[in-house]
Length: 219
Image (cartoon, rainbow, N blue to C red; front, side):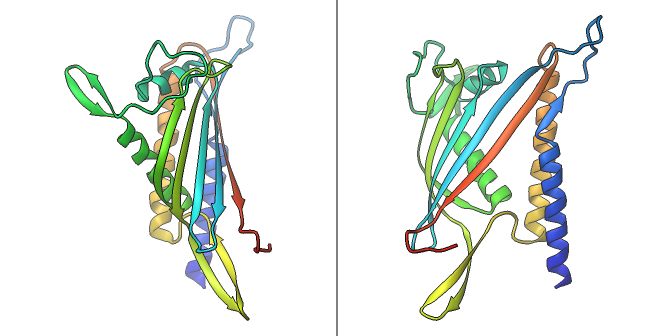
């Protein structure tokens, strides 16, 4: 019981750090009038989880990056073509050639998504399809990912039915330590990102998870 309480306490602390780390400010001086005009580098991540009757789930993940230098960085990471047409949807390139070397793009990106799902949410995800819109109607970037996953489900038999408890997040102290390490890495990356861009910026990131249950299920 004490171990469970410790895990719950640590998870709460991680969530507090996560919420507080969604906004980062550059350490740049204010202008001569003492007013800082900060550019907002915004991205959103919306995940729809459709739970199936067998306990597995279909996943649809949508990542949107607003029309800022952050979108340009993502285009570079995903090797988006410079002549992409407005609203054009295309596969994420398999490889890119840089300094005479062929480097994986799609596999590396998919691996980062699966690692994020596993360490932060506890979801073992298999990616079935992905595509990107390098230049959407507002000048930003969109990435769509469809997959299949096995969530952490605990079943308690109740008569002819059962009570399912879908666990989201690290399942034990070891997994929590890994998630905390990844979170610190993200914070460091965000700080380096802001430090590499001229001017004053705010990094604004959001994550939304929407769970859709089977028709016969009741909350």
